[in-house]
Amino acid sequence: MAYNTDELYKLALEQIKKYKPHSILQLCGLIGISHDTFYNHFPIDSDKSDNIKREMQLVAAEVTAVTIKKTFDSDTPTDRAMILKIYGGNEMRRKLATNYNEVTGKDGDVIKVDPFTKIRENNGIDREAKDSDSVVNG
Image 1: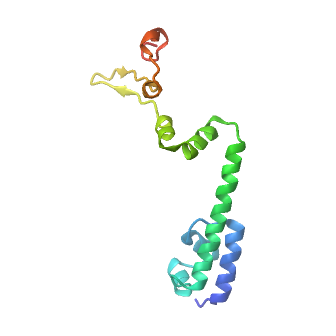
Image 2 (image 1 turned 135 degrees about the vertical axis):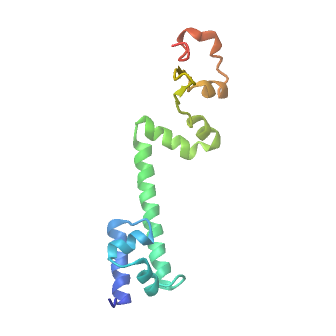
Image 3 (image 1 turned 60 degrees about the vertical axis):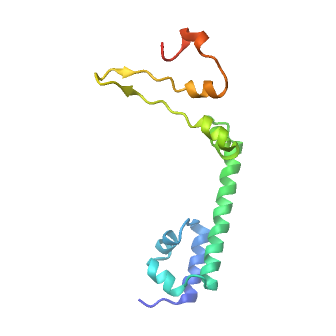
């Protein structure tokens, strides 16, 4: 099928503004052409290809800014943790990267694991003095 490059270009820019695709492959699906057809009409480093990619980057920046604003304005624990992971640096990300894993021994009995051990160690909290309310001793 023969496509008009100028019409494809105009359609691509319209679809970027309307649907905010995050990849060339997704854009190709929106305008109804294959990946190969896209690059036949818009070779890498051509002005039109560069303009399409620039528009997609601007849209991505806009989506990111809106998402971050909504996250900052939110009071949910998940959103607060996400903000800390994004802006808190490696130390904060490491502290937030805890999870609880249930581990079983050879006999199938559950070995209880305290998921907060590392947090307490990282923050210098001595848990030994409070064995009565420890998750391990449940």
